[in-house]
Length: 361
Image 1 (cartoon, rainbow, N blue to C red):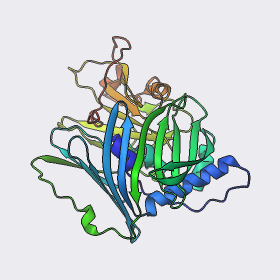
Image 2 (image 1 turned 45 degrees about the vertical axis):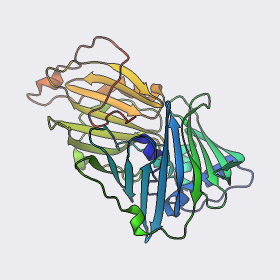
Image 3 (image 1 turned 120 degrees about the vertical axis):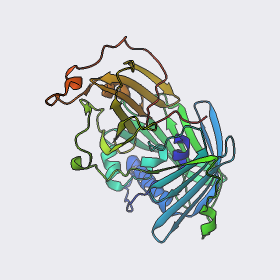
């Protein structure tokens, strides 16, 4: 599902930026802020390709901004029939029954579309912004921007924005050697003055398809402690710049208990921390895995099994996983008092969170 989120815009509010003459980072930041605004307020439609972790997918996308509200629909043109409908920050995924999907994590365009002038200034503590001149995407002249991390705890980005409309037409996630880890790119794009309501109507046979609805997070909506209480697992140490931007609780799919989801972000990259009470018969494990650019780490802390997932380097995931704590137990809370369960030692494995299932192939 993350490849769909590469293309799905997330609501943002911004204002025009003024670049200082000769300041390359300011010019680059201006382009990204303008791209964020364009991704929210433009009417556009076209064909997008996704490539990453040995996968390739083609999607048709339509996006409309009308009466201060966004609508976006994406339909897969390859593989299993799948659709995604977004109304402002509400995301509805429609997939064949039996296929595991997740819309828990924003990805490339998620927080990128929420950039503001102020946020770009804050991000400069952790990223370097550079203009890369002109290029050509989908037959249109574009301006390029690279966003390079200043440490080992985050990936970089390369964004190409349309010179006429500022819409981002190509977004790449890049590694420590500037290699492309994931990429989405328009192969054709048009900017109609209007798009009819019928373009966003989705009719499916509910006997054959599953509908999952989620609200996408906004960076400005910092969760209040009284809404969910204190997290059941304490984050002892976070990579520089990261903070909790969403706190959510929900039932496990099989109804056997609850899972807590903490979403962390530095304003551009994101990490999810899932924790659930470990059943007595479950075997405590510790280990790391990855699927393309997505890193995962699983561990047992006290009576909880914790899975950390993020589109960030493994060093960021490991720092969080190695510094988890459980709150001091209250009266009669013997499970927390026992402390971490014995581990068989680190081992590399495929880890799937109960609230963030494996991505569909």
